[in-house]
Length: 227
Image (cartoon, rainbow, N blue to C red; front, side):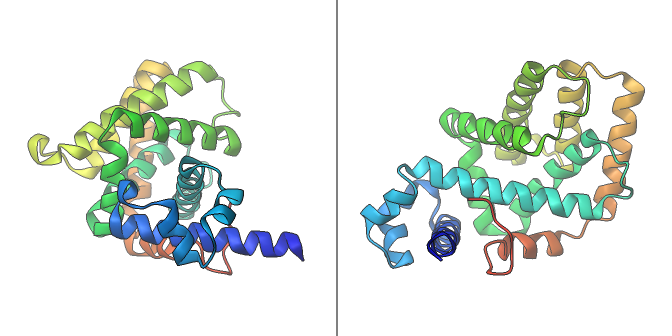
């Protein structure tokens, strides 16, 4: 019973944190605000999450998990390789920022500073390790980590300065995926082209409204969460 109550409270805390940062931005949301919205004391909140970064990391992990499930759901076939899904994944993030002002606020804040980019890269790397997405391939783990950091930085710059560069979400996804595959996975040109083509096919079948709804409801009682 205690464990179930603990899990339920964490769900409430994560849900409230997500909605608060969506409305106000990460920098404007304090522990006190989260505690008040969750109906608990700040000290009790800190017993679950000693630091705000731990709490934000769990919110981001749930966003990544939800996105990954949705991208897999829209994959044309079960054999779609991980790099094709990487392109679709980047595209989905870009489109969510266009579709939802609150999510755009979160994505923009993550992309706007070196500190938040470091956090984003680390969180993605930790999540990839947890999901073992690249473990079935003959890739050097260090190069995968470096590639993620490089791609996140490049994609974020194009996203943040989109008006200046005038690139579409799929073009940004192409640039990020190609740079990652060529420079860090040492993939051949045909392999890269195949991944981009398969990624495009996933994108063609993607319904952003469905993905948005999944993100919107990811902390509902009937959803499995990580915390």
